[in-house]
Length: 210
Length: 318
Image 1 (tube, rainbow over the protein chains, first blue to last red):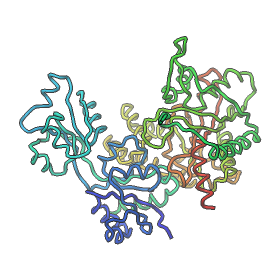
Image 2 (cartoon, rainbow over the protein chains, first blue to last red):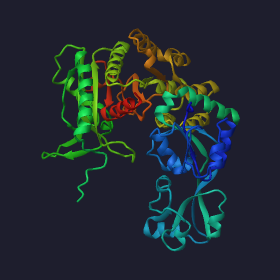
Image 3 (cartoon, helix red, strand yellow):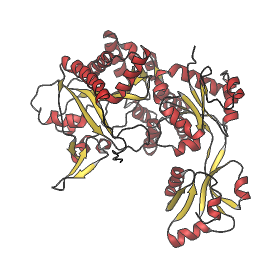
Image 4 (tube, rainbow over the protein chains, first blue to last red):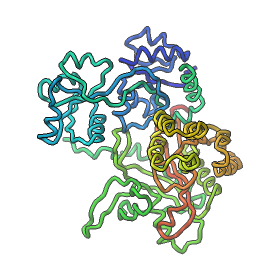
């Protein structure tokens, strides 16, 4: 018998805690833990995907539910998924950082009327600077954002950090902090209705664990 | 050599067209046999006409100037154009009026998903039959059309588009906080909804009502939690039970539709094979009045392409 719900589980930083959560919900993750390269676990109803792909799988109904960070959801505002529960783990902060001891951002704003920001999270960064009333030119990069202010690609960066260690190692300092992010349980809109009973029962069990 | 077409539009070739045509023919026979006359309206309307029906112009995504400098918009749904027709060309016709249509509608593709900018809608409008009686007729008809199309596992979600606004009033949420809560419910961000409601400092009972009612969905029993506020939906359930299709319904106390003209019950159609709603609609009793002919009305539209997807999935199962 196939499981009642398919869940998209993020590989990466949230993976271990997500599997622990599923264990506590009595969803069998032994197969997932034993097979690092397999992606689809039909018996357990688990698909493992990149965290940033979770909204995509869930929106299209390829998975009924998914677990991913609020940071990912904030970046994917164009994705129609329902956000059901704040799971509490996977805490990290989205921050604005720039070269330590300099005021490159202030200088740019004053003289050029805009600040140039490198980030992997262009929507989040754009929204943050719009909300705080500053013009920003947002440059999207796919990785190693810390490099951008060092070699002059940008005045500052918007990035996710848990401890801030990588920033310090690259001579950057945190200038502003945005809302912190934690893992969220999201649902496909259609599954949320057609499998209401199963989803509500799982949500109640998650809330019961807290 | 590549000659692309705009994203969100598509060509249909003969194999697919045969199936689509069969689907629309079946739906159209269902509608016309039930006494719904088919109409066409122009794909281009004056922008002002769409705005008369919905403040945002029903979210029309494409506008152009004609040679007189008038602003035209590609229709983003069929309901507003039909309201216009009923108030003008059919101004003397005795209600109730039963109309159906098949036509393309156009929306901006803000989202990078499978959302189309041009999509084929097929639907019905029942004008001049107020209350549950009108809604039951429309739902039953759409249901019959989907049955005929071979769908077996679909459900119709039924809610009340005004319920949350009434809850906000009843629980005395400050005016300035209402729009944000409404937006969070529309996005179904239950996490933020809960934390915002808690921050308002309302009574525990009020918080409970605002947070838990909109997440209730299931059989007719979910209506009990909302009390008298959903008497309209109870009446609708009764009528659909008489028609023998109550088991197709999912009552959803959080159901809201993005268009502003809905004034009561709202509907959406779901199928397990498709991650998106197949269609939707609801009651819009004020819309006709905006065109000068106040009449109660309700209607429902199907996204033909998505129904086709569900149909294909159903055939694979069979």
